[in-house]
Image 1 (cartoon, helix red, strand yellow):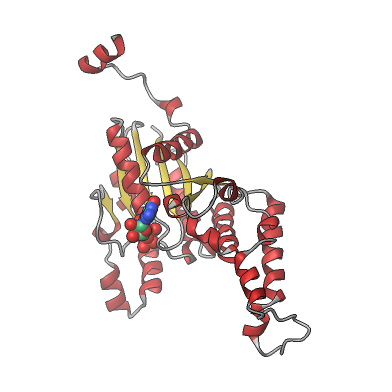
Image 2 (spheres, rainbow, N blue to C red):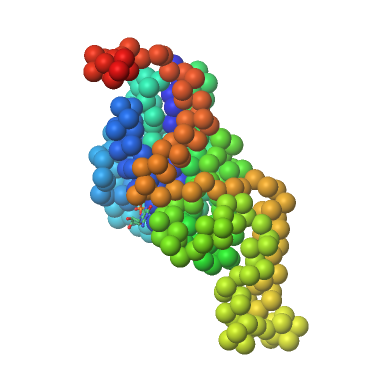
Length: 298
Ligand SMILES: Nc1nc2c(ncn2[C@@H]2O[C@H](COP(=O)(O)OP(=O)(O)OP(=O)(O)O)[C@@H](O)[C@H]2O)c(=O)[nH]1
Ligand SMILES: [Mg+2]
């Protein structure tokens, strides 16, 4: 029997756990079943208690103490340990029916999504036909406040693209915390950030600010040893332009908007997730309970 799931990823503080909580609340309100898996060994407080928590397998605190590792090295160790103990996942997930949406809350360390092969291995394990056979999609969150700084926005987009290429599962890119920017920017202006392209750099407020302050240094006149001067000037702009051009030419990234404080917004993202993993196609028609039947009849 197939399982259905979404892996919620993205940089630190992007709003992953908040989104997982909103999604679970929304599913519960709509009488759907959720199975919440926390894979962040540093996460301590939850709005909904996880059904499965990596901390029951390994504790980051113990790892850091015993292995004399820092928080990032400790996290990688925890994931390596998880990969050697995949039964921890199989035992909990194998009995789930098709009605469940498995929501996997990931840590924010960017290393996980860029150059370490742990996540691709984990995704292969979860999706492997004949085993858990999970129809899995990735939801990659990037904070909408990044749009204020174009360089940050493109760097974030690059990390989303990297995760996309690395994982090879259906991928949704999401601008989270939209409530924080929607009053600061006109709708039309915000719309430009849905699909990243180089024109966004033409009117970069940070660049205009630097020019006004007279700190733009042309690379030809800058001291090659003075990295700050170089990076504050047109070299930085050209670098951003090159990154933006690369992203634009691959046309791989476009964003959905998420405001966790808005039920309709969470529903809209859930619809995309359901479509990606073809959740509804697998559902048996449910027998209506008495109350629902009366509502339907009315
Ligand atoms: N205004 C607003 N704040 C949000 C939203 N989503 C998350 N936050 C806040 O952003 C902060 C980080 O949110 P988390 O959900 O913990 O982010 P995370 O990505 O799980 O963080 P890590 O697990 O530490 O990487 C918290 O203070 C949240 O309250 C949102 O949609 N709107
Ligand atoms: Mg979190």
